[in-house]
Image (cartoon, each protein chain N blue to C red):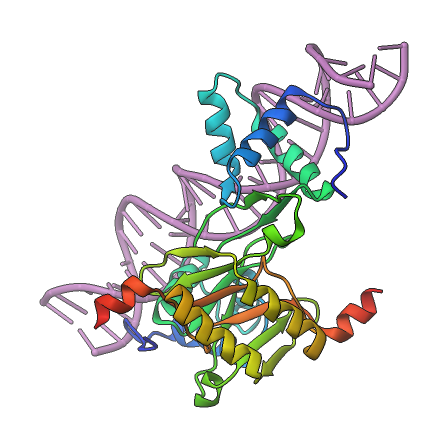
Length: 139
Length: 139
DNA sequence: TTGCGTGCAAAGGTTTTGCATGGCA
DNA sequence: TGCCATGCAAAACCTTTGCACGCAA
């Protein structure tokens, strides 16, 4: 996992760099396409899709979709060791990523492993929802 | 919420019945379309989408998307509130998606809300890791 | 009868694929 | 040089929309 597969091309580099420069955000294929064009380095849509697929397979980025949004989103996953010690909570409103260390979460991990036989990978897991300040805004 | 809006038509009835007959499953528009055709009661795709939208608004069913899947999924929500509380566990090895209902997970949701002010959206959240059978294969 | 529901076809998006060409190793 | 990567365009999908007709209330 996380071993760059394939050749190192300029397109691939640019795409990944854009994702790294915008961590914890809902990046779409369109965003990447638009950004690279503005940068004077247009990349074909098909290439973007193909590279993103590869990055997802490598475990470098994550792909997900958000309802009432059209198209998939991609997000760079930081690889720092600290990230294995806590969970990520991501607000779908303001896009903030919260890093949470919590006994309850550790217990959950143990429970899921012991009772469901499933070993959770904290670094890859993101809990989606709405944070406090955004919930207050809505009211 | 949960009050059937609009007219009662045969199409609507058939669509909802199919969802009720397949609780806790990832039903797609195609599934419904195919099933109804086989039943000798074809319904136009546009109608299915329109009815599903209405059922989602009513709160009768839930709409969500799954990564690496094309198209949205729908799911009937049984009346009891607790029953539709479940999370998704996805194995990064075999890509299987597990559908888990678990008291511990519900407690976690409550805990995160009360202690961290964060309202988790289960339909968007997927816990990544490795499932039991894949862990056994590795050893 | 009134007005929503339905079907069909067309339109609007997103994502994938085929194929010739280009570029990394 | 051997292969993978890229671009372009076409194709394949999913979902929405417009419109005339059908049907529930």
